[in-house]
Length: 170
Image (tube, rainbow, N blue to C red; front, side):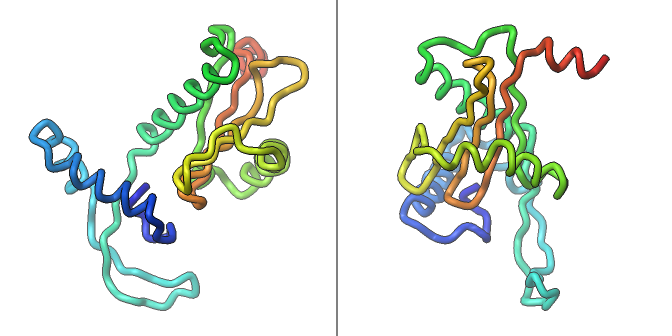
């Protein structure tokens, strides 16, 4: 996330960029460095109105890997809050808001995001990440999670009873 163009510069972001560069310079990170280079390509840069402004690099994000990192973060905050791991009877699904259709995003915003962000964040690490939770009254472990990275990149996590998912799939 630290190499996105659409995130405003901040000391925390610059610190993350420098840490990324340092980490990629270690011999043990040669595979990660090669992957970064392989997934980076040159593209035309165009404004929202369609005006060409030059050429630049574009990195193709491994979204399943990114969602896995967010999933581990949610599980860690869940453990810190409730003092126990997420119950085996529950499932967690994580989505980048950028992955959702406009209709799905509006539903998620109305039902989870708006509820969650009207409370104090459970975790706020400078301008790096804020974490909120929208609990469900009927089940203390179920609910929605909102993570906002660098004030600009939202992810949503949904925790639900696995049996509820199976009954909707039948």
